[in-house]
Amino acid sequence: MSDGVLDEAYERLDGTGPERNGWLSNHAPMAAEALVRGGHADRVHRWIDDYRDRLEERPRGISPISPEDWREPLGDPVRTGDWLDFFERELAERPWREVLARWWPRLLPGVAAGATHGVIRVGHAVRALLAEETGPRVRELGAGLGYWAARWQPLAPAGRGPYPAGDARSALDAVPRVPDQRFGIRTRLAQLAELPDWPRAAGAIPGARGTDVRARIEEIVSAAVLRFGTHGHGNPVMLVHAATAPTAILRTLDVLPAGLRQPSLAAAWAATAAVTSAYSPAQARPMPPRTVGDAADLLARAAHDRDAHGIKFADAAVDVFRRTGDQAALDVGAYAVGLIAGDG
Image (cartoon, rainbow, N blue to C red; front, side, top):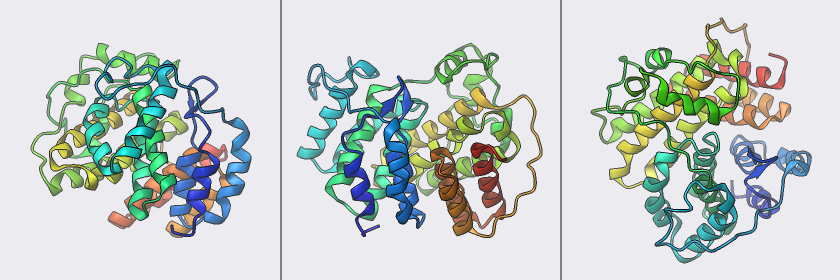
């Protein structure tokens, strides 16, 4: 990732806001990072050319946020410009790892921010920084943190219930569905507080320490990717986030202090469970047969179809395949790319 294409992409997007059309997320920085990481840097600028006219200018600030008085504007989208300015200042004054470690525990309870796109954007930026530390990548991390802070949205309290089953896939199957699935994610997530089984289904996962935390989050990501194969038809675009949100947390895990690993695991599970509850269809459906050669083939398909959600899901599915060797992850990735593109 040192050929400069990603930094050029970040610089082209530097003046754009994190949202468009009111509250839809700007996916361009995340898709650009995934394309470069997946070996398709040659497609990045053309992809941005096609996407650029959807974007809006970076919002202006209203009143500067101070390091001492950050709680009141947290979760206020009207202050988006102020939050972007705040993290730009913070990262100009301190190392990015220090800023991330300070703000991660403050932002993590609001993991649902921007339909989980806040944490997802941060995860892509951190992966880019771990590959190479550059000014554009540091600024992109600031944009992700600022977006997360502006749209900070806590989930209904999950309680301390145990993992409801012995493995993540069974646990996801046990997550109760929100009753009214007619509207957007904010309306759906608001219903979690009314679900009697939500505290047990989404409760913190006990007993995970050290490297076990990484293994448990990997299990959550794998389960969410594979479950898409039987449930993705319900809402292909939104169910993608059941996998990409914990993937983002996983990519950030190794730069966090040890004390933040367990809360990260709990947040990864809660985010996945919440998206699953909000968007799973009432019935599973067998996935149509899919043929995909290897990881490079899947990433090429996603790059060809050009949809940001397909690109990011394929990116997460390839991670699962490389960890586990499970061909099913690639097959589900191909199914997702086709479904999102409308030919699945």
